[in-house]
Length: 427
Image (cartoon, rainbow, N blue to C red; front, side, top):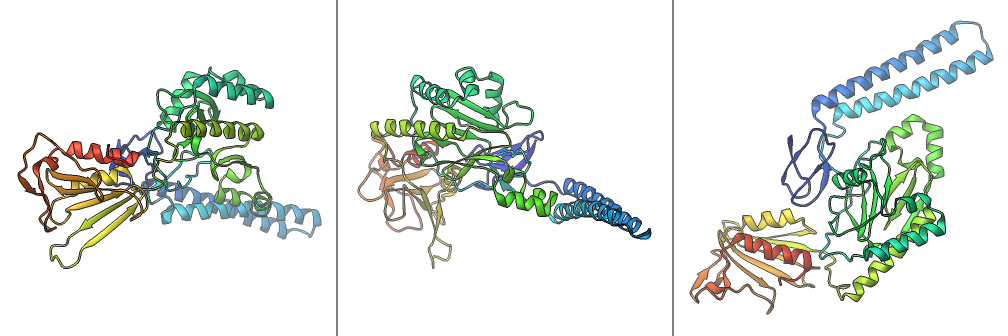
């Protein structure tokens, strides 16, 4: 086991040596730790040696072709062979230099293991603030069956309700860790080299789980489903640059890609029934959206969360206010634990845009906390405590509260704040 620091929340994360990426238990971020220097050095020198080898062959071919009598056909052959060796030499030299100067040196947030081997940068995520809507199993399977029969998707029909348990286990271990026990797997697209379910796309009656994108996508959040095929730019890049273009851009531009909300969720070099997937995901999204609307929760989710931390320097001359947009739960928890009633006496969690949405104040520290919703809203109350006033902040004048408003249990404070973080309400 090796220990690394999560790039999102700073929590120490243990990574198995057999895994390429690590998963943070605090915020759920998947990231690829930096490659050790010794490993980069080995690969760098191997590529440099290969570059020198191919370059030497190119020079030898040119010298041999120019040493004899002029022959048009021989000249063409010499030019073709030397050009190929030169391109391979250049590609190896570039890769070798990238390895030696620090390619992969920093920690990179990734979506998953790309079949081409290149990490995909993940987008800033929005956490799910409430339980996503679940389409009833019978209704979801009926939709899949109906649309699969319409488009002749025989593989989907054969596997509906009969996905291989081992493949499902691999998918949930690698990229669908957020899938819940009450979800029903509907379809699995396998993009792994060994066809074992470790890379691909898993569709359930609640959402999409993809090894090509860092976060689950709720069915109710699907707004746009598109497909992309290899474009002319990829073909031109290969025509003019050959292996060098593949080395720089990876294999993705040459594959068929399925996109949801402008994010690539599946990529394959094989044929993909785009019409089927576009219609199926759109139908499931509509169904999930109607279920959410009927439950009355369609507009309760905060669009964003802002963590506001107030710091009072020891000289008391200038108050510092730091705002973190869309923080991870790990960042919020660490900020609460850091409260000390003096330099760091309070923080505020906005359930939306600053000054435009409700907010939860946490004041105090060191075992004495006051939790209250901004304005005349909710406030923590313990009827078993007395009316004796307690000073919960030494740096903010007037912050004295009756004991029945003070919470002395840090775990209870974290529980309330996390509930507010996920739902936008303290109750």
